Image 1 (cartoon, rainbow, N blue to C red):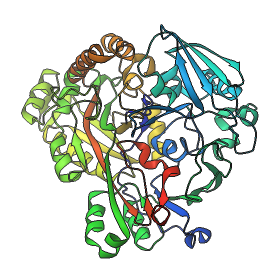
Image 2: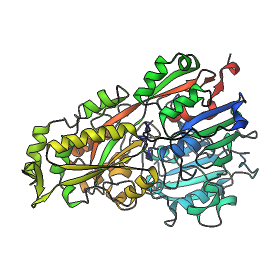
Image 3: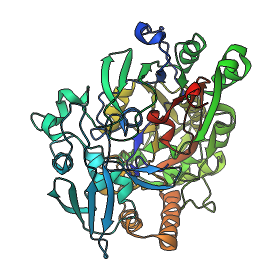
Length: 536
């Protein structure tokens, strides 16, 4: 699943929220759903700010809404391993790949009954290109490729491309189409429909009870195959411990992510084992440490390499993640066709790290490393909901302390974490990216054009990296593989991001349900969930 969308390129942030670490009292169950069999209740580990992925995207917003509430023109089908039409029934490329003609599906209606047309697609692109709209990350995935676009007629949309890009359909897959008739007035950044979206998908928005749950209801007039499950309740449960307790009491049907201790509970608890099946997948994407290269202390690659050699990732994978992760040498996940196993990750080597710190002028004196006579003090931001991140951050803190470097761990609530990240107000930050197709595109994370108002949170600028990222978007086959390998080798030297691992996500699904399984976010394709009795 490289999607992120391919964000995907579009990046879906923070699936490091894999394991919760904060206490929460048990939210009150929704009495209306407790006794209904055609209801799927899913644990949601964080409450999104809104439900329109185009604006300040994050992974859970995408999972909750993409091709469920809102729909895109295309999507990646992991079963067929290709892109398939959604609101675009089919598409044609010109011979020179300079024009893409999308033939839109007829008879599609928005949830309020209005007909969908090419004007909705044009409106969505117009808002995407509007610099006043807070959609920098989504815009960055598409704008460098698209020269122009227009509605040909009510059912045809034409896109002219500046250049050929092997990631373009992947980028389109993360762009959910918005209703022109309902959202053209007012400030899109603050539009009321951000929290009660109007879409074309299998499910329609029902209600949002802040701090408790977000509910969806089946769209009975859906243009395609109607969803089997009548109602879906995303129940906000911020810790995996509580989620499993609720599952044991019959108040949750699907807990998408469990930390190692909860997996052991699932295996050892007879009641849970009888009622729930273990489901798992390798998550397309990687976890990493962002290094703010604009900080004077962190501007030099030799310092960043020294930091990388101070982090024992193998120990993290084995002891903290307990096999629920796989070490990666770069930000390319193992399922990516351009993944190069010959690229080696930075080793945990305290002696090498010490030599590099010395060479960088971070001299050890009286047990503390100093730069220009000032003790070195750094901070690492970690989202408070991720217990595993907090644990490996503590290991990092101990390793750096042995080097004479003070590392303060700042555990922040997600909205605060994101604001600090976007303001570039940090030294180091624990982060993750997830992709929406199969191929990784690091343009958003590393291109210098994204360093000010995009997802290049490291603020990293390097013309060599820029050229490679631009070339990779246009190349295919062996040429692209060679360019990707060159990029990975360069990043090992520059180390603006320290690669950690890709997750092996393990969840618990009620045996009353059958769900799609795939190496992608098809796991969250709730429109394809079925009651087991319905498939016998």
